[in-house]
Amino acid sequence: KKVRVKVPASTANLGPGFDTLGMALNLYAWIEMGAADHTHIELYGDQMQGIPTDKNNLIYEVAQMVFDKAGVSCPELYIAMYSDIPLTRGLGSSASAIVGGLAAANALIGSPFDNDALFQMATSLEKHPDNVGASLFGGLVVAFWDGERAEHIRLEPSDRLEALVAIPDFQLATEKARGVLPQQLSMKDAVFNVGHSSVLVAALASGRLDMISRAMKDALHQPYRAALIPGMETILRDASDHGALGAALSGAGPTLLALVDSESAGKAGLERFLLETLGQENISAATLWLK
Ligand code: HSE
Image 1: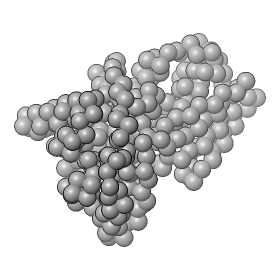
Image 2: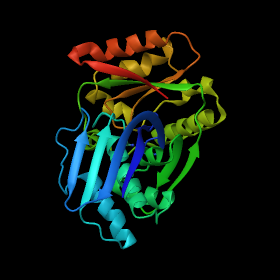
Image 3: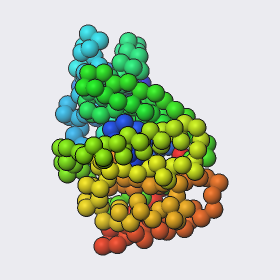
Image 4: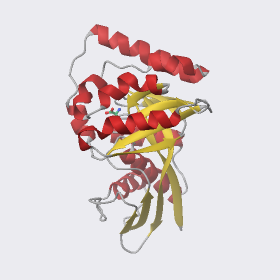
């Protein structure tokens, strides 16, 4: 018996919703899994350099976690993964591998766990629920994790909402991008973020696209991470002058995300602005239009 799952990439934070907001994007990884005589892991795609193909593979490890919890033994696995999701760029590639591994392993043994149980396992591995929530449930996920349980609500983003992601040609480890964050914040910045994140969620939930650019501002992580990504500050400041509804660092970066009204003119101009701004200092970048 073999199972196959398809898992979306995701963008986390959407600006102010640090470790809280996640949105699935139509860029995918596919994972195939089956019991085998000996463990055999095949990786396909451009992005697979350095990923272990033995029992240290993340998908293998999360699958064993599911089997352990279910009281099932299945030590030898065939795993194949094909992914279009760029690695270590802020598009949730590790979350998609975790969610895909959990979902495939669960399906392989007859689905003893529901999605909520998989969400708890995925969040405790990632330590934040935003990317794994979006990869598992799809759509726009609003979530928190208290260290024991993760809670979420899934919202359906407006049909008119499109995402333009600009992917710089360098990797940025999440640990590094979390390492530059302060241990303490002022009450003023905390209130700023609660307000902006709350209005952003309300705007997205009620289709108030006009409110997105004002709400998509952050004082908690982006100001500290900007130094790691040349061009980021300019893009966050000026993207709405070039036709974006709002812009944010995608997850821990370095990818930048612009939300766009699909009915607006000037999409090509926005794309040019992002590429030119990131192109400074010889950082080549690619853009993708996603939903
Ligand atoms: N919320 C996380 C962060 C997402 O910004 O660090 C990246 O894993």
